[in-house]
Image (tube, rainbow, N blue to C red; front, top):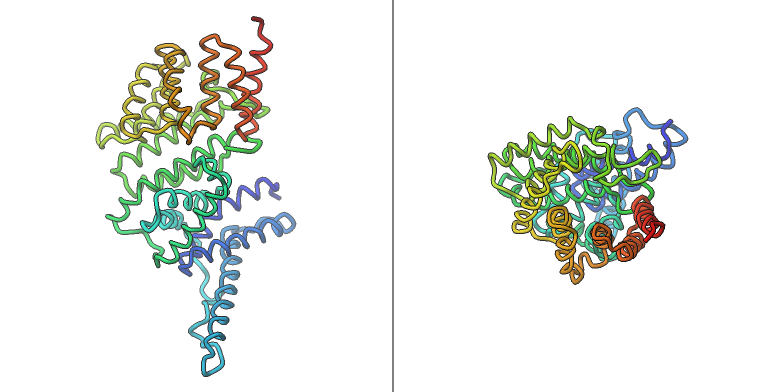
Length: 417
């Protein structure tokens, strides 16, 4: 029998597939999500006692389909009664299809669902938020942290997105080639955020959430098969592979965080690194340059260094300079500052951080405080570094990061002047 954690991971992994199956059949995205949530609740209460079904996806699809059938029948009957039809009965053609008359196929329509979530009637932020909710399975709170906005704001954004999808009359099928290209940027960014949430969880007791990184990589591979000539699709997949390759080396047996420079590189996944480097090398040689390719190239430079001290930081600085020109954002500047500090010294890196204090997207983000503390420690300002680590620990909701940051601060407190 599966443990509660394993069951939770399983139903979360299957939820997008079930939602896609119902949306394909009934065409009502918002109602389908409600039905899937009821099916997931039924699984959470029944499977621990009865055991996981042989076909858990099919079980969830069947239960969710029945819930949706009941819901649609109730709505249609209510509407018909209000209209006071002359016959006084509900015509057969108004009935929703019976759940067991035509079983829903257990197909993987996750990619189609992803494209639906990025419908052109939605703004890019709404597309990404809805994708994270419906396809990535993230909670509203997790998505809000990813966007650096209040949870209430994100809840409203997701609700409005569902309403727009319904009002648009969008059909559940892959869009034509021209429209598909227009949605790709939002799709890639959504997968990027899903991966990041899995690689470094924004909250909770664990540093990583493997089910999210796996799902992001799986969907990126699907996109790669669909668009084999797109350099940014290849770049994103390469970035995910090169980053995820470090997963086993990032934590100790007790779950505590190991910083990048201190990781045992013998534990890095060489198969993922080889695949990632091959992908990005080919993309850089044959396709127009894009932000994901540049990030993958930076990850490749790290992966190629046998030891931390062998890292070609000058090359990384050059790549970040290109990235800042191509796709400027505060997180890029933050990482660029670290690379500059490794080449030109910590004070040069600290100077790059100063403008970020007035950037509302990052001013109260724990990573800004953590990076500044790290550079201050490199510069010998232990008091300033200690304060920075403490501030970062207060701002993060990830327990492993809190413990790591407090440990850094405590170590500086204990060190002799």
